[in-house]
Amino acid sequence: MISIFRKEINLFFSSLIGYIVVGVFLVVLGLFLFVFPDTSLLSHGFATLDPLFSMAPTIFIFLVPAVTMRTFAEEQQNGTIELLITRPISDWQILAGKYLASLALVVFALIPTVLYYYTVYQLGAPQGNLDAGGILGSYIGLFFLAAGFVAIGVFASAVTKNQIVAFLLATALSFWFYWGFDYLSRLPFLLGGGDTVLQMSGMLYHYESLSRGVLDSRDMVYFVSLAGFFLFLSILAMERRKW
Amino acid sequence: MQANKKIQTTLQAVLGLAVVVLLNIVANSRMSGRPLYGALDLTEEKRFTLTPGTRAMLEQQEDVVFIRVLLAGDKYPAGFKRLQEATREMLEDFRGTALLSTNFTTQPGTATRSTSGGKKYKEDGILPVNLRVKGTDETSITSIFPYAIVFRASNRRWSIFWKTRYRRTQRRDP
Image 1: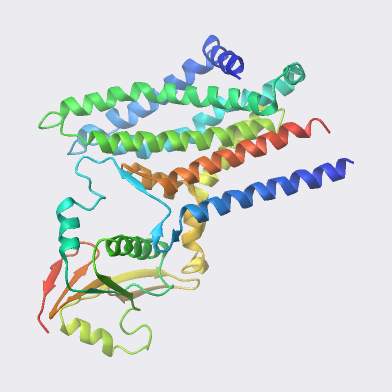
Image 2: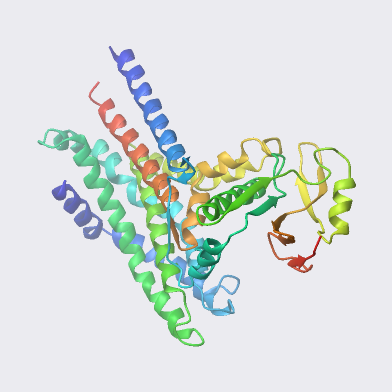
């Protein structure tokens, strides 16, 4: 598993993918947080990093599928998956290696955003007037969200040979799990009958709860079980090729 | 053979989904009044946790406090259902430290379709707020009373769930 993890990480950074993912994430976030006046932290009036945590999921919906689309689809397209499965490692180990490598890349993309925290910390009046604990909680929420998106992306990559299809499928599924349930719950005929359950089935509800800076076991169970479910589906998709 | 494999895979996927749903139901439930979930408040001011002062005050409480929450019923948008659930959970937590009796009642006037109950509340200074509800055919505006009324010994106090232009809390002796 560790060798697959290493191989995947090396692959990300020996090609342009890793640098492009981290670069695009930081440039887009930077533009929204420091340049565009409507969302700029500088014109926010008080020291906060809330716009970062409300914007990051939208970028993740497009960025995470770009990271994960090649995990299995490329191996299947090139035929190297056959070489991989003949190695004395289980499907779960292959999956865990690829999943953790993709998640690590997303975490790498998040690490430089600590600079945004430092900037707002320095610009606060008085200096340091920032809720560090709450921000740490929000980062943990973002990590759980990324873990869910990566699992969806890996599943999408496991069901197809085509990387474009994997990207589109992962984006659609991520969009559905983040916003879809919430939008669906607003249908008038669901008022008072199922709208709450639908909202609780979506990622947005649990991410908003974690973003407050409160680590609630219910939200963590949701994200872990969602990621576990999509990884389990990925295993089923991998086993399909043995038929 | 292949058809059997397909059925088996589908069943495994459905079973996996059932496990996930069950796990989340258990994670959200309570057993013998105690929650199976917990939360770690990382905010600096512990905004979402009872302060030691509040906890001490609740523990020292000798009289039974009765709280009537005007949020029962199903015909609310999801936001109100969440408020209802959050209020219920918070009061359950309070009950662990204080002598507390709670009661969720329907909005005045909604259960009986009469407005006399609503009038009584208005006379007491409990003013409704307007809520826009989008139905299947039309959008309607309905007046609701998002309040909790607290009774303790001979005192009664009421509090609205969010800030309005009206006074947030008022006191009135019966």
